[in-house]
Image 1 (cartoon, rainbow over the protein chains, first blue to last red):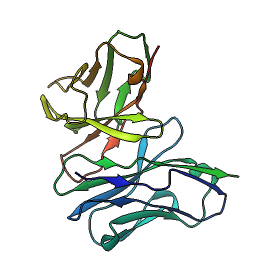
Image 2: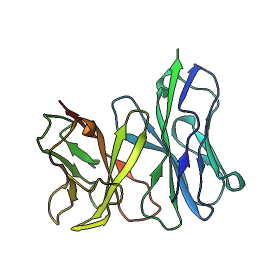
Image 3: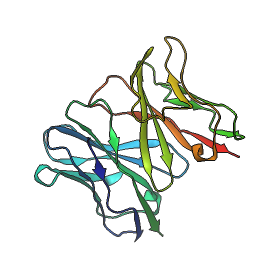
Image 4: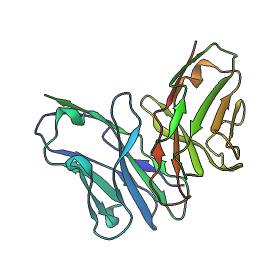
Amino acid sequence: AQSVSQHNHHVILSEAASLELGCNYSYGGTVNLFWYVQYPGQHLQLLLKYFSGDPLVKGIKGFEAEFIKSKFSFNLRKPSVQWSDTAEYFCAVYSGGSYIPTFGRGTSLIVHP
Amino acid sequence: NAGVMQNPRHLVRRRGQEARLRCSPMKGHSHVYWYRQLPEEGLKFMVYLQKENIIDESGMPKERFSAEFPKEGPSILRIQQVVRGDSAAYFCASSPRSMNTEAFFGQGTRLTVV
């Protein structure tokens, strides 16, 4: 069964710091990858997604992620975080024709002003 | 263009009562997923439904939990004889097709069992 690992469970940064959140998955075949964000008290919203093509994906709010197939990774990055980026971030994977997206445990990001 | 609507947003039940959580998918979406979110545990898949069919309920406890998505009306997640351990946020997501597509989430129902 597919599994998704987000190794950083809690991240605390100051504004303007750079961010990288890790996401690794276990399935070796074709995958579709997503990052979602959940602001406090709100529902999950899509940040970005990768289906095929350029492995460097640009999302909303200055976020980007890079799909590295050889490392089974899809890390999320932002060069300069803001206080408003404080949220929970979830990596999700569809794999091998599965119709159920598998989510990672999530990473809680707190950005201090 | 209304998003995924879940109600109620907050639900308090005493142990032993029934909880009914409703989810109306986005217009044109016929695929619904239910997830449970517990602190420090992320999102756990519970059940995947299409109109009138349960496609995969492998993540749902065998007892007390049931789900439906009738031809007309919202999808319902029902928890009978609730226990304190059922307290969690329950999220519904919908998508226009079954595979490899973005899932749109509702705002969730926070169930508290007292």
